[in-house]
Image (cartoon, rainbow, N blue to C red; front, side):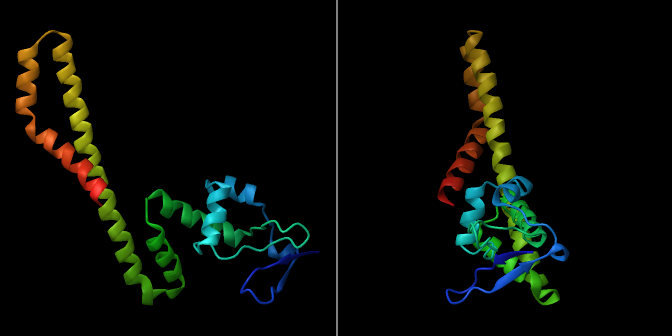
Length: 173
């Protein structure tokens, strides 16, 4: 039987006895590989409270992740992949145990993130249209068709403005 220290408040640290019934324990390297997040991110998330304090091996001080920790890391990895802010991620994770009482706020947080993603998609589409326009423009230039290039730019004012707005809104936000 191995003894694992579970860090808590700065006072005493209670010991967790790890036995076969508690399941396997994983190193930070293994947790990183399984979650898809770098070890530095796991340490950072623990430091800022996104991840609760992870149990430690008392002989080495190394983090020991259990299956419950890995399940949480999977959720965090998915939230992070959506681009959710750390503030909203922290709130979302804190609300999970609230069940029906916090379900409304969970829906709001996810809906807000969905709206942000929709806006990002619209911005990307505007930027893509601009790139496609410039490909056509430079095709005209390559073919020594200055009149075609000028006409294309004149007809594409909306595409150019949309691309500028998408970039400026991103920088302003």
